[in-house]
Length: 117
Image 1 (cartoon, one colour):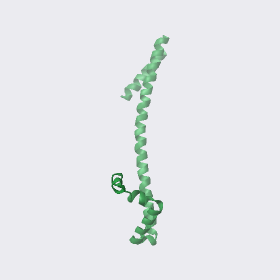
Image 2 (cartoon, helix red, strand yellow):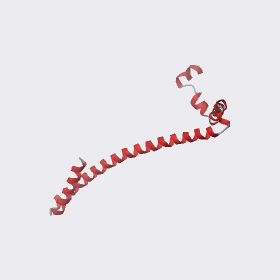
Image 3 (cartoon, one colour):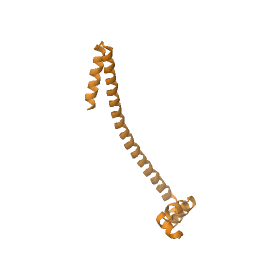
Image 4 (cartoon, helix red, strand yellow):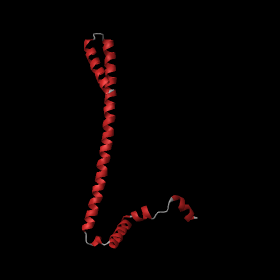
């Protein structure tokens, strides 16, 4: 499809050079511009999809490597090798940052009405 459009653009460019009539030349230039915009949008759409996929893969890789690093650091720490101490330390960190109450201990909105009455 795009190859045909590019061939048509080339033909129009050659026709513009041959034509003497200014109205026809203006019409050919308008058609040429619209075809160039069509090709531009097609290429932009393909690169947009490629960019989205590339950024998704890069982001997923970053998250995986981050958590692998956290795991490796904690496995090297003698204090955190004990599962019980690791659990308590994790709960303390979650409680201090507020994530424990916000994410794990909150009451869903439907159930809150039952508890307030």
